[in-house]
Length: 250
Image: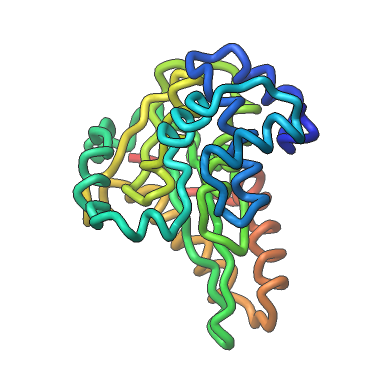
């Protein structure tokens, strides 16, 4: 099953007995949905589960899980009234940091890695520890999507022993409001915290971190390709956690 899901064995057993009993089924359903160009409804996915995976499953259960995780073809979404802004506001969690950055918590964000000479772009997702100011995990992708955020989060979870009660703060990007993000956090006892809309200073520490990264990589070197830029960022991330002298926190 781990090979089918493309996840590690440790990750599978970490989530297998969590509060959300639908999570593993959701991963399979999501995989089928993506493999079929985001076009299958619950009946076709039910048939696929039976024919290709040998599952004995009721179509009502598949429909319930798809609704729960908002798995629906884009053209169907487009037919519905656009309540996205209102819904995002309703889904946002409280700001548990309140701009107090001298506490035990993680902060996370995504930043663009844009090559100025040709506009080519990659995306960097980072989770930073407020206490040590070290990054806990990071991932670089050519797509600014939900897997970028979930992979960064799972990487951080796998290398951290006690997460219960830990605050994880972000802005209100759609990835951080998603059901999957919330389920992964909840399953590990992580408390979700969101900045207020249009208030980047609520997440100032990681905003500053990404700003420093760009100044010391992109703006400090004559970079000609996006691949070269990504390599430089990867080297800088290691340098930051192991060697770079930092200002003392006041």
